[in-house]
Image (cartoon, rainbow, N blue to C red; front, side, top):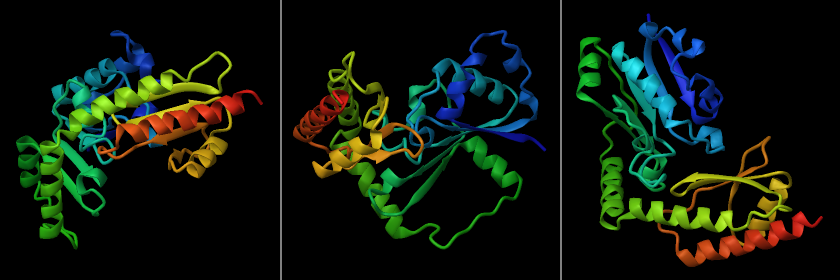
Amino acid sequence: MRNLIWSTGHDLILADIVKARNCQLFSNIPFDKIGIFLFEPGSSSGLVNFPSAKLIERISKKITENDGLIVINEVTTGAGRTGKWFGFQHYDLKPDMIAIGKGIGNGYPVSVAAISGRAARLLENCHFHYSQSHQNDPLGATVVNEVIGTISDENLVERSRMLGEKIMKGLEGLKRSDSILKEIRGRGLMIAIEFTRDAELIQKELIKKGFIVAKRSGHEVLRIDPALTIEEKDIDAFIRSLNEIITYLSRK
């Protein structure tokens, strides 16, 4: 029986040591015994880390050369969130299966599994059967169809990319030598802001000003995932409010 490689961006940031072509650690991986490479292209348990393209593409190539499958978890990164329809499109790879949820239902609880012809044939040949209460739900299918149509008609994927660049540029402008702002990471409208301290206090102050942001427990990181339809004036107001807060706290 083959094994499974599970990957999140957070885990694979640590795996930059396998970048070198002749790295002993990479060469010791038994790819002939691995059936599936499961990859989440960016959420990283809320920390928004993105593993290097070279690393992911090398692993994927070795998996496919040994007849393994590439499975992508796009539950948080799909539906335009990262400035492309899917997060895996930031990498040069061809998935055999994509798991999609959350954004694809725009608030309606729905999940989608898209599979390649190769994966479908493998499932048929192994007599795999799956069923659940809301399988082939016509309401869910209708919602997904409308969401896909709206994203396409209103060019929201490209909008996500452009507005993400605007937010990143605005946040970079807040960096100063005396600032508690440490690092900014993001693709499209999936962005993390890391501080040297006081992330929880900053979160509370932002909420007072009308901005809901998430804080990852145990880390000085705030994550923002605004709607793909967010207005530019709201982005400007967020940047101004954050600047006021961190300017005050940096002086303490």
